Length: 451
Image (cartoon, rainbow, N blue to C red; front, side, top):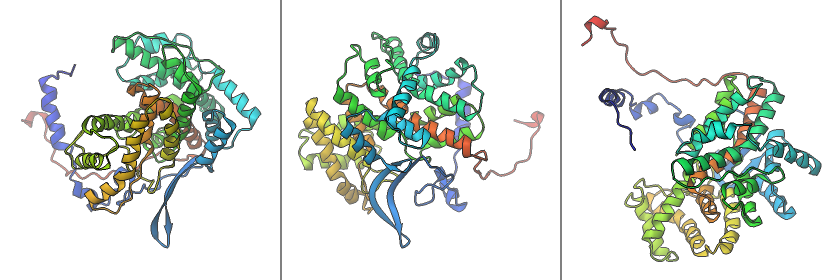
């Protein structure tokens, strides 16, 4: 049900609309780095990190040259990490968490010990589920997750201890507990808002993050190895993406104020919830539903292409002119995450009998770059990004759409915590960018003279 606002609020809202709009030309006049970006869209350099990096182009002889995308964790190519994990038939997300937090790849004994620590901390504190989740359900799982993170402060007897060891332990506890916070928040939503049965399954200390999550969100607790492996891959690919993405930068900004771990990570969850950040894969799935409903032959290149043109021309789907899952701020020729997830999705599609639908995804990936160039008259290289395939993978796993962004959070908290530890260990100044005041000075009017 929509809010019914008091008449005064409605009239005051008009004042906000009148006074709080900045003339776009002023950003050019004052050379403002909107969104902390230069005029060409590249991010303004505001910090240094050793945790992750993203490559999509190189500068050669002063010219920007597009290159196949690379995602780097602590100096290692993610493709190499995943290749080794698949060859050894292991779950790899826990190894990536270790790498991001501590800077080195774990050996066999180190990862066994680390897995045991995660396993010991997967359960939520005593009475937390009942008091903090079930008694205050939310219609949005991400909001419930943020609330759970902030509420964890009250269950920590040493919450304000700013030592590295305490911040590390808090980080490990949150990383371990995120799957349960998400799963139980979803179950509370199902019962209170959807009128469906609720089932609470405890996490098991001997299972991986992906196995535990599938076990907790399914009524029968059953999953197979192939399902857990592709979810593990998705966790690895979303764990980190450099310090400049909005939620990781949020961690740096909030941590630089010398606040507690729960406040910093809670703020990052709020950032990731935003439709411009973590919710893109949901928009992809919604767009694909629209395409499937309006295209009779999913293998017909012309029919599919014609409908994509309608979307670009704001004549179809949400009239935004955006084809979701296509294009990226950094990657040009390719998004390595999309390629890795696509290859795994092809195998799962055969198991789940979704080959026809997978073929539609592949066709769009193939034809869209040329369609974009023709429609926009631009030379900008467009590649498929990871959001294009992640939602499809989650749908094949039978995961509800309201969990797509929370899954992103379960993964990205590894990178968030690594960035927080780096900030409090290396940071020296609170983030404080400048805003130019452009309003004119006005003559003050006393209360008795105001009309």
